[in-house]
Length: 326
Picture 1 (cartoon, rainbow, N blue to C red):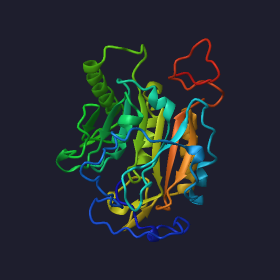
Picture 2 (cartoon, rainbow, N blue to C red):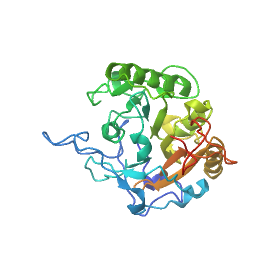
Picture 3 (cartoon, rainbow, N blue to C red):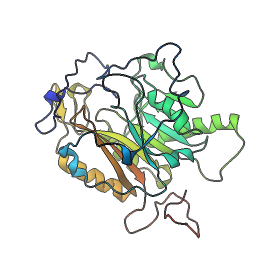
Picture 4 (cartoon, helix red, strand yellow):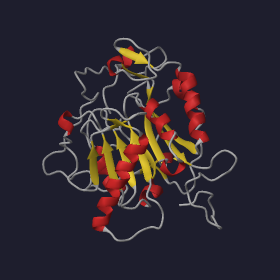
């Protein structure tokens, strides 16, 4: 997560009840987390800690996001969980992620958890080492000083790539086709050194995580243009309706200070329709209590309109109790 605009500066209707002022200088995070004490167990050592989403109280409700429409029921085999942030700090929980845990468990060493945006903080990657126990984790971030991820976990299961995802190839931006191929190639090379087993299916991006301060409106449209076999099975994204003007984010108004997403109500409806057209269900929405213009949303590949199976999951003659085939 990068800088957040001050809640007090957000457009009317976007502020939460508790006004939290973020005093930020440069590209620092909106909150500071405490480092783990020397000798304390790492997040990897703590194992995968998850909580069923059904047992987690709603944190906030920002009506400005209601244009997304109602949440879909999660597929029965999803096992929808909350992966709580475990690094201490006054806003602990800001980076909680939702996921279909059973699908993470089924990823192989050739599959990829794709993490877009790090700010040189790898809490998510450390959690995924346990929560997606076999998958490769590929982190993409073009903003680090000297392209040096000094806090990256010291394991080959996590790779770092100094690129951001955009809708064209220029400078440090690469499109989704290029970045997903890069991630899968890295996973395949690493898997070849540790295993000889193969699943008989093509490797896939099993989970895409992004928290990129408004750039998600460009990245999501780019991902949706991909062929069916390159679509991530799960997409966990924090949607932003405001961001810092100096970032120059497409789809946001031009100005100084805080800029808001242009025509946000229609954009929310349009995003939901485009996701549905490619076979995605929106199975969770988790509005951020510390950010009135932020909501964590989980999209998963389910049944496309008309009852057809999401096109890149292999069909069988007996799909069993669910229409989604693993």
